Amino acid sequence: MRARVVDAAGVEHAKAERGARIVSLVPSITELLFALKLDAQIVGRTGFCVHPRDKVRRVPKVGGTKAVKIDALRALQPTHVVVNIDENERETVEQLRAFVPHVVVTHPLTPEDNLALYALLGAIFDRHDEARALGVELQTQLDACASREWPRQNVLYAIWREPWMTVARDTYISAMLRLVNWQTLPDVRGGETGAARYPSFDLDAAWLAQTDRVLLSSEPYRFTQQHCDALGRDARLAGKRIGLVDGEMVSWYGSRAIDGIAYLLDYASR
Image (cartoon, rainbow, N blue to C red; front, side, top):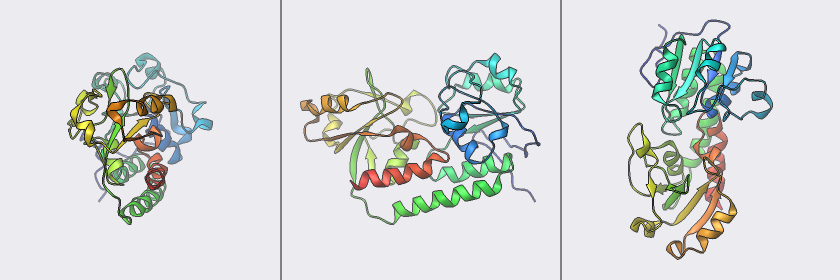
């Protein structure tokens, strides 16, 4: 009996027919679809879907993750559109359901969830072997992290400034950081969806005193060394270790998580 293939919205999906036309509205999923060797079937992407650079150039853009050009997407006549609960607007997804035969919803919340993500897309698009191979690589990296003892550190992971914004503890980013025993502050949970998953904060917040390390992400805000230097001169962060971190490596799920975990392991070892 064939196992049920169910996406993050609880929708069951059948195996795609040959010649499926796929639009990805999620940057890391676009990269994963290429890793699954679906190059010929990817017909659309967002402007933020920039990897793999040598291959995405030929794929038409349909706007951004939050501002999808519905008419441009419709013109591509997709059979499948892959979306994400954090990345894409619910209203957009509902519009797509009106004319796209198959909308595949994703929502990985931990690095381990990538195993199910690989299996989901591998099953829908008949890439079981490729999905299994990615799973083996991911598990190797997870095991490498688990084999070491990491001293606990409280970290502030900044994703934006003006206003300052960070991540709740139930986000994918926080779960990635926990692989090396880095616990994000503040100790809040944002729920499954919504702005509370990425709360704003003030540099006068009392909980900052508990922070050991400040990580400034390269995306979505492009923090630079100048920002690190400025915070290093701020008396409110005296004694804190402040550094830049590659946001793609920490926040992108899919195939990028394999290299992302290796990157994080190396970063935490410095």
